[in-house]
Length: 154
Ligand SMILES: [Zn+2]
Image (cartoon, rainbow, N blue to C red; front, side, top):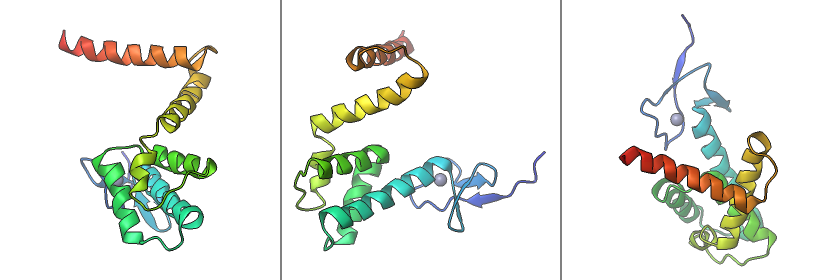
């Protein structure tokens, strides 16, 4: 019913079953087409590199930084939005990052994790939940998730 063209997703790390994306569903960056989530990850990765270069070290060895970022996002499966958030957070609190590998420690920082979870819940909360304390809400979400998983095995 549609004459929509398809494009090959331009994201090198595209993990969709089909790397093809319909024109209607594609996000165009420059003159290349991406799946929506691929475009997001792509943009986050670029933002992380720029931020690192501008605020942490302008002498960073880029391939090394890229490899650490790829490792975190594609091997550890850490949300690229979280990595960007964590780097911004570390810069804001003036936490010293001496080399790209330092990113592994930042994403594991419990304060940053807590802060990210709160932020996520606030954005969910705006839509779904009545105002409650963040902790209560978080508990409920975890409980729901767990219940969902348990049910799978019953
Ligand atoms: Zn893709």
